[in-house]
Amino acid sequence: MNKQPKYRQVADALRREIDNGVYPPGSRLPSESELSTRFEASRNTVRSGLNALVSEGLIFSSQGLGYEVRKHEVFELNASRFENLTFPQNGDAYNTDVTNAGRHPTQTFRVEVTPATDYIAGRLKVDVGSTTVLRFCHRFVDDVPWSTQATYYPDWLVKEAPRLAEPGDIAEGTTRYLAAAGIAQVGYFDEIATRMPTPDESRLLDVGAGVPVLLWTRTGYAGDKVIRCTITTFRGDLNRMSYEIGELPARIEGARP
Amino acid sequence: MNKQPKYRQVADALRREIDNGVYPPGSRLPSESELSTRFEASRNTVRSGLNALVSEGLIFSSQGLGYEVRKHEVFELNASRFENLTFPQNGDAYNTDVTNAGRHPTQTFRVEVTPATDYIAGRLKVDVGSTTVLRFCHRFVDDVPWSTQATYYPDWLVKEAPRLAEPGDIAEGTTRYLAAAGIAQVGYFDEIATRMPTPDESRLLDVGAGVPVLLWTRTGYAGDKVIRCTITTFRGDLNRMSYEIGELPARIEGARP
DNA sequence: TGCATCAGCTTGTACCAACAAGTTGAGCAA
DNA sequence: TTGCTCAACTTGTTGGTACAAGCTGATGCA
Image (cartoon, rainbow over the protein chains, first blue to last red):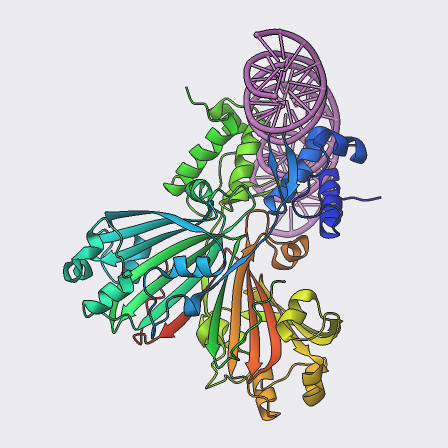
């Protein structure tokens, strides 16, 4: 006799069938009542099992429609090439990357002045609560919410490069603008973490339960000075990051698994 | 009148209180029946709310004990220094790193021969299903499951460096052993992704619902040849990765947020 | 034809009840 | 003191019911 609880048996059976292609990505699962009959369990028990798969990010549900197997089309962002130190791209690196991938990028943009949080202050080497300029992007690919990007600049830098605090875009790109102002970014420190989305992030990135976010913090240096800190949040199911270190052959298999 | 469902009101109220420090990390929440009284909701409704917070990774529950606010002590792994290309460390880079952090590392180890999956084959540039040698580590820090590491070597390489297929440890480290065999690793390609753990991973890493895993794939190159592919899975709540690119000051604030 | 309505499906929310199973501390017995 | 049992707490599992709310296709009216 199986001593696993019944809702877990339901989840395990369905997970196995999804893995084996019985229910391929994009297809719909049988309804709760059908599963209830099949597993000889109450609707509540079946729901518990389905809920486990939702939490694993394997399926999602829509009221009135049913449960659907999640699709995973992963976009890989090459972080070590993203903003090339020696050949900074003209304009926005993100737009270039997405367009090259044959997708359609859109974004909303906002500038505000905000006090530094612990996290930001520690990285910008400024006091907690001191003034920073935040330039915030909400990015979409083919009209699907993709990522949010928040770049914080320290107060002293804004005094030297005042256009950072102006609401509009900087056409030639902030990196080029700063370089022209005599502040050349010569190094990065990248940190990558993951966690489940906050309710705010769930809303902005349109992720349901069961999909983690990828957090990418890039701190930019010009000599000993920290000139910016960029925090990007990605949908974990749609994004992957990559780094190239040392000598590599010209063509790397960015193979899709 | 609030049109949010009641279980969500419960989750939101508790989340706010956790964020505000009413329930600090490590502390216990009131019992389901107490919350049931407080929110004038049934036990099932309260459980739905608590379950949402569990899925967010904010709290966890133990039968007979109650709900506890999760602690987050993050260990940062510097991936660009982890295996220094110019000065490879003696022995295991992981053990050195963890010991330096004042923690106690342990691990179990296993070697097996296994056919290449799609993912592995694509990265090792070999045919799907061809023979590879897998060296597998299950790592603990202070007896807490921390990560699993699976390194795959292509068949042709094992012919030139036969000790890779032997069950025991390679005392001087595989990188040094390979270098001594004339195969110098000169570059890496790193890929980082996140997702919810599979049941296997949940078991090996002892993660409950609501904690994503961080997947780190490092493909090692010697000239045009791929000599290995290492897949590391971390508990996402306990680990963060970092990369240094370009010129950076000597001391970087690996600030804890 | 075109459009509005509605029946009948789906999942979402909320409640109730009962028992299983893990943890803890009080209190008793050796 | 030591060790055991057990009551009283905790969460876990499973069943039930009822109604709300979203989606779709059939139906029938204009």
